[in-house]
Picture 1 (cartoon, rainbow, N blue to C red):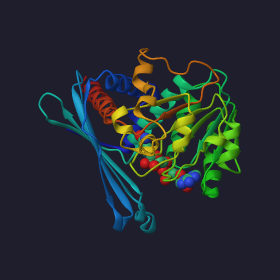
Picture 2: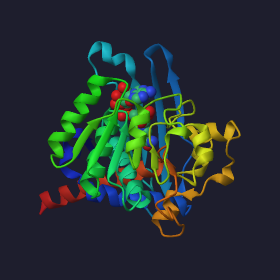
Picture 3: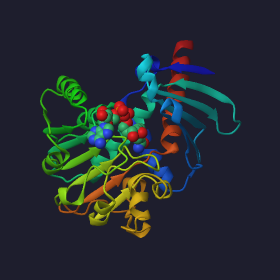
Picture 4: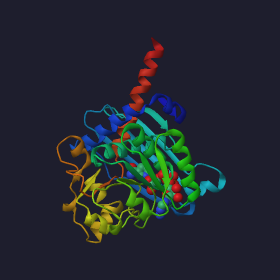
Length: 326
Ligand SMILES: NC(=O)c1ccc[n+]([C@@H]2O[C@H](COP(=O)([O-])OP(=O)(O)OC[C@H]3O[C@@H](n4cnc5c(N)ncnc54)[C@H](O)[C@@H]3O)[C@@H](O)[C@H]2O)c1
């Protein structure tokens, strides 16, 4: 049995392999090769926190992963990280414990950023040059690193966060990583939306940030932050205005995030959802048809992503041991 810490994970996992596994996770999910209960959430009001459990069993995959990810906002006051994350990998045939991945959110951030980068690659306009990022926290950095590192074409990144210090820190870090890209702080969300061809929303907002009157034709909006029932970053009315809406999981998006709010407010019906990302990645459904469509893609996160990434780590660890034994 392996116990793998974050520092070791960083050494053994490379971005291209992770992207490939996340692509497989979307496709397996949409091909109904995934057995997954709905994610299990509960709030910790006293600690201003939340706990989330996710898991999925995949047809043909030798392992499955159970993930427990927790946010304890009050940890900030005592100087501890607010996010803790652990993935536990088991043998799919026997249930035997294979690995405990003390990932502290690193794998969750990686798998989410891979998902965002795959969506960007598949759904953005061909002519997209301007990227917008709303929220300047962990996911903002991860998404930007993966999108600019793996997908070519963006020349300018517009950033907005309610916390100006965090926006500046994000901009400074990204500039040092991508010196040929221009980074601009937007004065408002409206200004960012006007300038950007592709927009990532990566905040824990519970009220909509992007409103229908802000958007122009051809924009791609990739919603990442609203992964719980009460969260919402994209206006329910904007879903009604979109030409196409894609989601990672039809079932989960009926329960979580902006799509569910738009359906509950009767702005759209489930029939307005064009399809799942996995169907587009597998070439079974058309994604964006032209550069005029307004396309919204909403990701609430899949247990299958955790199982594929957990399996990747386990297989890499097995290889490390085999090489050492030679
Ligand atoms: N879909 C998924 O699979 C997935 C995976 C991981 C995280 N998430 C979600 O993504 C969100 C961001 O996660 P993170 O780790 O980057 O959090 P974080 O706390 O590191 O960063 C969030 C940032 O959003 C900013 N923000 C908050 N409200 C805002 C608003 N109204 N307008 C602009 N900026 C605002 C904060 O100032 C902060 O800088 C969370 O809601 C998290 O649960 C989703």
